[in-house]
Length: 284
Image (cartoon, rainbow, N blue to C red):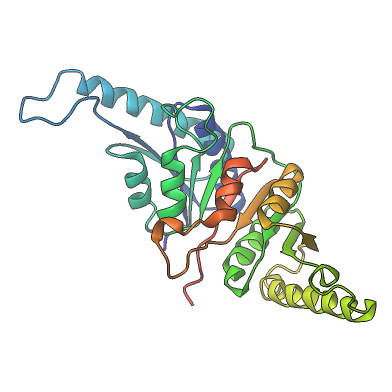
């Protein structure tokens, strides 16, 4: 796998924010950045000569890519930045182009999306089907300070924790690990206080052990472990108000491929106040 970030761009404000995030991430990781713009014909393919305005569409696409590459090079000096304008479906092309990448970054809603929607169909398809971790960036939800926040549910979220710790280390910031749970007092009314305290201690110990594997490679990262009484989506959306990135694991293991993001991830993609990284399960 090549150390390369792929960024999907168009003329939308969200794509501009995604490009800036991707360039800064490439700078932090000291890896290459590839900018992709997918353009489409405005007509149905027919067995007739190519319309004369297809050349204009291609030139416009190449101009957009050239400007995006130039901007990325200014944001990330010294980083290898390349670009390509490709004819085809945006989501399909981004998924194909990211096969050998380490990360795929795109805006939450493209230029042609419906007004009022926070998440477009391309972003949803990419987040659901891309083979690599995906970062979705909204134009009004891009902030460069605060901690990295990771949502943890089960051991399957180890990949999300690994990515969150690595991103916090590269950004020089802290990491907040959040697990939504029902406090013992709510699950077992009348439970003695000392038993309830033991259960909470065991829960925190489990989280600490889960995070410790990633911290072994990045011991400088400061970690704050939080247990939240309530649903995971609500906890992570609230935490995103003061975060630079929220990392969530995938869901739908063994189920439909389209459900890979899961309910919590979908809520984050729609409502988070900062960029959202959807992790992928570890190869192991």
